[in-house]
Image (tube, rainbow, N blue to C red):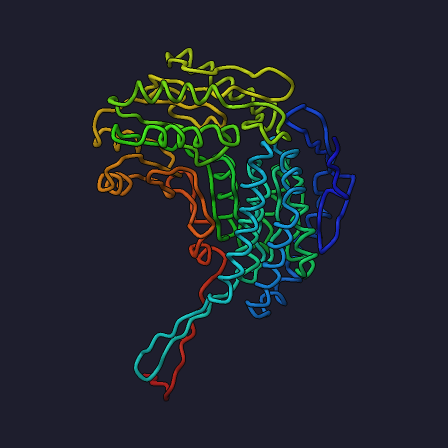
Length: 483
């Protein structure tokens, strides 16, 4: 099973290789087999990417927004037309089941391209009357943007970052995670085929040193990262040295609160989606499930039954509902958290070990009787491990849900919509749900607070993060100088 691209990088409209770069092996997580071999970007490759982006950006910014929009819309259509092949590549790259990648990964990317294509021509400035004189404002692109992707949704992230960047007149140099480098190259191909001028979306491969070279280059105006909190802190500090714009979409330890009047089936389903979808490798997952004591036993019984019915197996089979973790290292990290939860006294409800067969599979795992001070309730696991905690009162659960350094997401399930809005209004999180979980339409802003990040992706909020305002004062009379 081979997924070897034409070359490691895509720069100025063409594939580029430089075998002097360190080797990168792409592993299919379901079997551990090597499916592609790439090379990290050398300084020469990084320079070529940044130089072509800087050269191409000015002319792109000068185009009519509607002309830029047509190119993005064509790219969105191409993605949808090729979704089956792109989904298969995404499954090989990430190990996620094909039933997920067919509906959630590239389709979400196409939605982003389409939506920002529609938004681009509507982005305008304002006129501010001052009596005789007036001020008008312009929304201008930032210039060259750097996107740094994560390995859990590599192609979706490449689209989510590049769509607003390109729609508003910027260029982007994108570095995928070294673990999942393949999808971004296909996106670059599609952009060129759709008519995007060369240089405006370049892809370079590599580990942290490549990202560091990109975010500290003086030609870079903006950095957008999706990744872990430690990585975000390093990138944020490096970008700040050059006073660059930043968007940081980082990790979380998000609460999902279930009151005893909630629909049991809906709440259990949401908790499973918020812990087991993509084998739990989702930054916004509701990994602290707070269940009111009146419903706790029924909730756990139904959760156990449904979790044990999940089909693990070959991710390329459409019947498979959960695939492996992305790497052996991630599997071992997750198993370490499971072992620690057991040692700290959490009660194992189901799962708790590796699944049979090849690859990096971990069973869907649920722990009950988790308390707030346990490691499982404090740290981001990024695997299919759910922590269920008890609570009595609304005031109690709000305080406990907010007692974390993270602030990415939160959810509440209740039949009392007044209470739902009241509770969500007090959650210290940037992305929230009521009687739903982990739905992230491109029309809505996505991002976190506290250590979970700064800035927003998607929605009209993205305009603020890929443009800057120019204010122009227009004098309509003589200058009144005191000297």
